[in-house]
Length: 192
Length: 192
DNA sequence: GCAGATTACTTTCCATGGAAAGGATCGTCA
DNA sequence: TGACGATCCTTTCCATGGAAAGTAATCTGC
Image 1 (cartoon, rainbow over the protein chains, first blue to last red):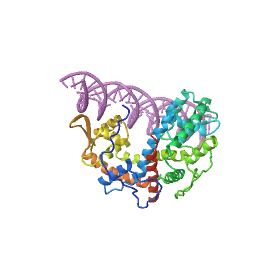
Image 2 (cartoon, rainbow over the protein chains, first blue to last red):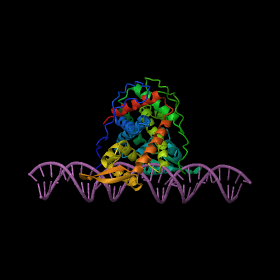
Image 3 (cartoon, chains in turn purple, cyan, green, red):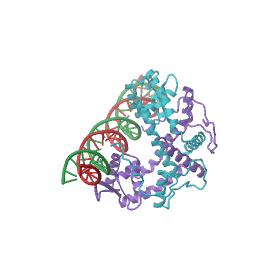
Image 4 (cartoon, helix red, strand yellow):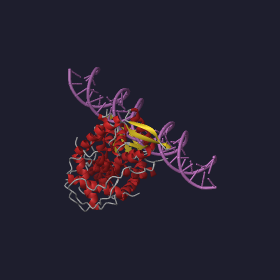
């Protein structure tokens, strides 16, 4: 078995439109989704709490996983996982000579240095990157795309972006821009 | 070492405001962030491609992880991981008698049945849930909150929602509602 | 010029969850 | 009624990545 078919949420729960007084019509209609149901359940069970933050945070989480699943299908066609893709893409977009040290990769891909070591191990074994000591500092390791790695990521990124574009096709360009700005602002204003 | 401090993205990259012609002012200013830099790098390296979908999808991914990290701090104060929290919260919001079968938990929490088994194992060991056979169908297992589990999740959810509310405090109620609607629409219109 | 701190990466161990096989039970239909 | 397939959960094995210790090289201050 791969995945249980999910018999849907148990409780009925009310539709629940916009939960916050100021309602801005963005063109998205008020259809109910899994998060509306979850928020409705919380309203019923804990009327003393305001579950409305879940509308944003829960949807970001669910969308993340839904998108990730679809993106990884493309990576899979190239026998590649998300982690390897991130490393190749980071090296590629850094520009010639497509070489970064492990610390830069760790920072850009937001994983620990240990994870970078393992990702690079796999890519090196596949012949897509090489590792060499940095001149002048023998502690540093420079990871560089091979020609084969460069070709692969150049193909893959094209398909990846086509895929991403398809995934967003339900939103108009204006909606995509509005969403971008709201997400950027949320990221900038996160505490800590 | 816990996490390398990330020496920031290597290339400078242009500021890049809204990439899509129709620009809707949502109040978020045009400050540059990590994704603007990434998109700028791709524009420079692959001017033949349109990297703008990354503005939405990349930010959803980054925000997901940033939020997750902050949410898990609260769970950690209760010696609890994200997976256990999800199970307790799902049982709690289902309402009395706070009992669901493993399949329902699997569907609601979006993990495989195997993962549910392990999460429930841990919660059972901690005395927060019990497992019993469903009457009428000996294959089914009913997972139910104990009183202790109910008390814990009732406290924890309060803190969790306060935390989520703080995380969104940088957005006005109207912006939160607009973001909710856009995310809901994106979720509804995802291909597949 | 060298001891101790720091840096940069690797290694080891562990936690989590997916995939797929396994086991028990149930439903169906001959 | 009993065999076969479907369903529901558990088990096993594996992949991934984090935490923290380990290792080697570099820096700092004296």
